[in-house]
Amino acid sequence: MRNAKQTAERRRRSAERAARALTARAARWITGPLAAMTAKRTLDLTLGSALLLLTAPAVTLAALALTLRPPRDRGARKREIRVGLGGRPFELRSLRTRRLRLDLLSRLPHVVRGELSLVGPSPLTPEDAALLGPSAGHWRQSVRPGLTGLAQVRARSGMPWDEPALLDAHYAEHHGTGLDLAILAQSVHISLRAALSGLRRPGKARLSDTDHRLPGYSVAE
Image (tube, rainbow, N blue to C red; front, top):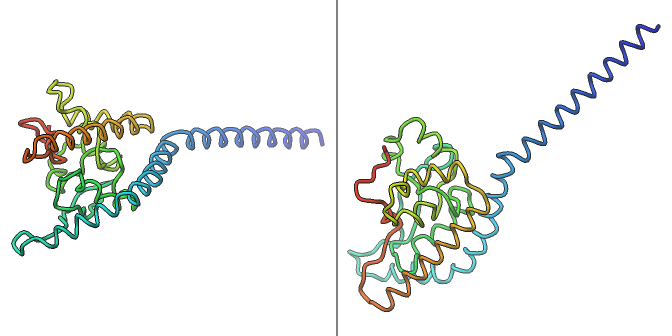
């Protein structure tokens, strides 16, 4: 009888230890990468949806203006295949204009759908993605590509450590809500400064979302 009670007590304690260990693992899982991804996705959904509503009139007017161009210049939207989270391809659609960064703002539906993030590495074409090495390809697929990113706000400094591929890798390893908000604020500052500069000097060429790449830059590096 005593042995039976001791056996039952050992089983009860063993079950309690297993339950505590399972709870601890679940807590680490929730507060680890999944929590960071959830926070990032929440930011994309809330801020992305708000920006989509705010900029919809301007984007709609720009699309209408593009459709009224002469036949040889028509084609309001540009469609390209890009590689997204997990290496999954998707069709990226954007307006064929750089005025007031409407080309980027027209991509906000991709953010709401989850194909893009507000902040992340530049979305690559399948051909460029195929040139990446195993390590670069792995971290590239671990985060969603973004409308803007660390490379876009830092790579124009010309410093060796601000090379776009290094900045994208750094972002993939250290991304978080705080960094995303800082990059978004800097992106808005750069866009406003470029817009004001363009108003002061009409006719000056505007930068595209790929102009941040340094001479000789290759995704294979």
